[in-house]
Amino acid sequence: MSEAGAGSREHQEEMEQASNEHQVPEISFSQRYAEGQDSHQAQEASQSMNQSKALGFDLYQTQEPRSAYQTYGVGQEHYQAYEDGHGPYQPHEPGYGLYQPGYSPYDDQIPDPEARMLAIQNAKAYLLTSSTTSGLNLYDHLANTLTKILDEQPTNAVDIIENISKDVKWAQFQKKMDTLRDEPAMLPTFESAERHKTLFLKAYEEGDEELEEKIGETPLPNVMETAFYFEQAGIGLSKDEYYHIFLALKKLISAQPIQTCRFWGKILGLEMNYIIAEVQFQEGAEEEETEEEEVTDEGEKRMGEVEDEDEEKEKEDEPPKSTYKPPPVIPKEENGTGANKYVYFVCNEPGKPWVKLPPVTPAQIVCARKIKKFFTGRLDAPVVSFPPFPGTEANYLRAQIARISAGTHVCPIGFYRFAEEEGDEDEEGGGGRDTYEENPDFQPLSVAEMVESLSTWVHYVPSILKQGRCVWINSLQKSEEEEEEGEEEEEKDEEPDELQQEIGPPLLTPLSEDEGIQNIPAWTAQPSTNLIPQYAVAILQSNRWPGAYAFASGMKFNNIYFGWGHKYSPENHTPALPGTVQKEYPDGPEITEATDPAVEEELAFKAAKEKALAAAEKKKNRRVMKRKT
Image (cartoon, rainbow, N blue to C red; front, side):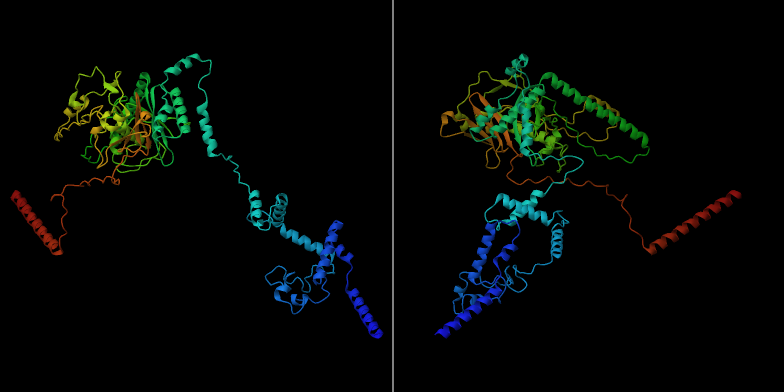
C-alpha cells in the first residue's frame, strides 16, 4: 500500500509541474487591457477568464480545440452539450474560426509597434475617404452615429441602428442656396394669415367723427345675417370664411364709390375660386366710366380709319374682294340697364385685390350658351372652345353671372311693384315695364304658403332673349349715317327679310310658369326644418342652375349661388358642329377645264390650221395683185 501511495503522489506532482509550465500568470492578462482602465474592470476581466476556464474553454490555445461533445463529455445528449454554452460556430456566423490557430484575440505575440501604427493610420485614412456623391466620410458618420446613440440611449439600439444612421445623414443634408435670390420657406397658412391681416385693420381712427356718422348709412350688406338664414338649411360656407368675405366687402366699399352692394356668391374653379360682389355705383361715378369707354372706342375707330387709308395708298392693284357680308353686330346694353344693370367685382380669396369685370356683350352671352367650360381661377386665361368665345375667362365669367342672375334671382310675390309713372304705359311689343320699386304695403306670407305653391315667388330680374339682350333691338335697322351712305351706292342686292321681334316673359312673372327639364321641375321649395315649423325658413332651390338658392322669412329674403357656374342638362354636353363649307367657285362650262386631246386629234387640228393659214395667204396675195393692176 505504501508503495502504491508513493507512486500516486509522484504521478500527481508530475502532472502539477506540467500544468504550471503551461499556465500564464494573471498579471499578463491585465496588462493586455488598455492603460487607464480601473481595477474594477480588470477584476471583471479576470472573473470572466476564470468562468471560461471552468466551462472548459482554452483561452490561450494551449491545447487543441475541442468540440462541444469533447468539452461536456462523450455520451451526453445533443441538447445537454449545448445547454450551458454555445456550440460549434457555423461558417456564416461571426465567431467562425475564432479558436483556429492564428485567429486568437489573446495571442501572446505582440506585433511590431511601428507596423501596428502604420496599419492604424492606413485604416483611418480609408475611413476618412469622402464619398463622391454625398461628400461624407465613414469615420465622421460612425462617430456621429455613436454619439447620437450614447446621447439618446434608445432601447434595443442594435435593432434600429439603420434608422439612426439614416437620421444622421438627413441631419447633415443642407439645401443648395441660390446666390441670386433668397427663397425663404413660407407655409401656406402663414401666407393666408398675412393676407387676412389687412382685413382686420381699422380704416379710420376713433376721433374721426365724419366717418363714424357714415357708418350708419353704409351700403355694406349684413353677410353674417344672410349666412345665418341659409345655415338653417345647411347651405353656405364656414363662419370664418363668411366673416372674411364680410371684411373684404367692407374694404371694397371704402375704396369704390358704391351705392348698393350684395354678396352674389362663389363660383368654383379648378385652380382658384371666384368670390363675387354685386354693386351699383353712384350716379356721377357711373357716368365717368361710360365716358372713358366711349373715348377708348372712338380712339380705336380713328386708328382703324388711319390704317385703312394707309392700306389704300400702298395697294394699287387689289385682289377681288369677297362678297360675303357678316351679320350685323348687336350692340351691348348700356351700363345700368338690362344685363349690365349691375357691376361685378371678383377676387380669388378674401384679402386679395378686387377686380372689376367688364360689361357683357350679346355675342358673349350667345356663345356662352353653346359651350361648357370649367373656370380656372385666372381672369386672363384663354377660353378654348368651339364656337370660339369672343374674350377671355373674365368675359366668360361675366356672361355666366348674367345668365345665372336672370334665371335664379327671385323674391316673394308682392315685395316689389311697378313704378307708378310707368304703370299705365304699354310700350311696343308688350315689353312692358322694366322698372320696379319696393312695395310699402307688402304683407309677408307664411312659410307654409311659400313652400306649397311656386306662384308665391316671382322673378325680379329681366330674362335674357335669344339675341343676348334683355331688350330686343332690330339689328337690320340702319342709322341715319348708314342710310346716307347706302343711297349713294348702287343697291344691287335685295333687301333681307325683316326680323321677327323677340318677346320674353315680363318682370315679376311667377315661378309656376317656368318650364321644367323633362320630368324634373324647375324649382324645389321646402322648409328649413319640419321639427320646429314655427321658426322654419322657406328655402327655394333651382334645379335648372344647381347651386342657386333663395330664402324668405318675413320681410327678409335673399339669393345666393355656390357652384361651378354650369346649367343642368339631362344629356351629356355635345359641342356645336361646324357649319357647311362654302363653295370655292360656281360650276359651269365656261370655267370647266377641258380634257386633253389625243395625238390624232392634235395632228388633225394642226393640219387644219395650216390649211387655213395657206388659204388666208392666197387671198391676201390676190388682193395685192388686184391693187397693182
